[in-house]
Length: 274
Image (cartoon, rainbow, N blue to C red; front, side, top):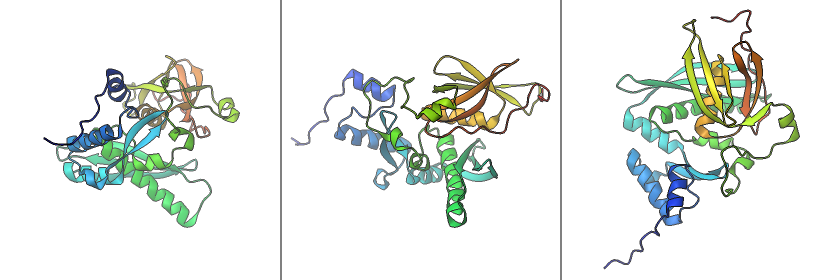
């Protein structure tokens, strides 16, 4: 008869917290190891290369993908990566990467880093980080994994990785400085992002549902991509809006830990492309 101890049973509340809310903090160390091994096994990854790591984010303990995970996923699924665009705008360096599977299915995602006023090697490293981030994010996306990448975790503020909060509600957000609150209309979570075509085939209108129940829209693809990222990663954002004849337009969106900077303004009613 073996002497190995069985893992303690998991109660229904803990199962709900793990499966429905993605919070692993209530698992024992043994259960976390088994969960980790099961995730690796389901994806065909080698657990001994440590493809994932645990992090506490906004009160929940979750897994995030490391470099080893995305590299193994690309090899397993024969994912090819193509850099579509590289550009610097308003002090932010943005790289868009496309991932393609042998079946022809493809997906695109972006990596963005603020450049600030740094130069030389530091600036070059930031630009390379944006490209790495784009490649890893699109790899996770095309492989169906909606989890954070290691490059995103590195840029998280200390407040976001604080100790878990018991019974944290989705609409609760970490406290912000007065300056942030004064510069924003609302502090919210993004719960849904939908896209609808317009009369101009080159332009889509995005409908964004907020945790308050309100709905805002935008035709700015950069803002829409930020909203989709906020929805996937479940982090709070600061937003600015304005009333238009089309409804409430989103004019700025930024992570709650960063100062809001407005993107290129969307077209006004005089030069709307539809």
